Amino acid sequence: MRIAVVGVQGDVEEHVLSLKKAFERAGVKGEAVATRKKGIVSESDAAIIPGGESTTISKLIFREGISEEILQLAEDGKPVMGTCAGLILLSKHGDEQVERTETKLLGLMDTWVRRNAFGRQRESFQTLLHVKGIGEYEAVFIRAPVITKVGNKVEVLAKYGDFIVAARQENSLALAFHPELTDDTRVHEYFIRMALE
Image (cartoon, rainbow, N blue to C red; front, top):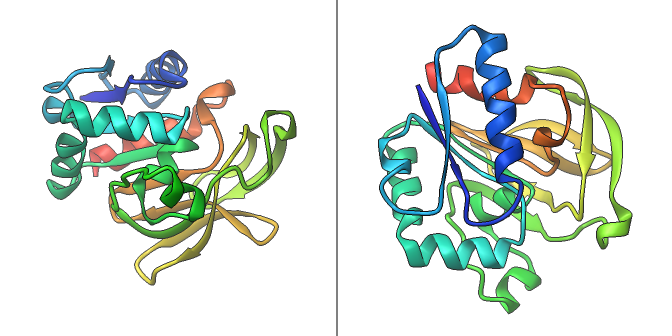
């Protein structure tokens, strides 16, 4: 099994390392490949869009043709995970910041998002969440977006107060937090299981 980490910007190496540990812990033979170019996502069994700056990531994946590969992968029933900025890109509906910056979204999930919902970098925090299918999970939020509303095909996996911070729609998984910044690999293991389904 091969999982591509879209490496145009953000926590790329951290996702690669988390996936390697998760493959080991899940007893699955697999590789994690970071990519900035077209041609890797299309040959993978799943893909991750990491955190970073959503406007920059969007520009680069659409310019390099990686966006088409992600959309094709999803259409073929293979899983795509977006964390933090990746959650924004998976959404169909952006907020006024998304519109103002003309950030193109992939639209794989019927979700409405709000960028930087908790403020700037210094408002980063860690909190214990209950994540459906995973259990109690110590989540790291950094300038995190949130999902404010979901369509009826979207399954809510975790909430923080009134905000949705993890959701799944078929083979797309969106997280407002950074699972790659903890030693807990259960989110990546959950994603590997999605790729095996």
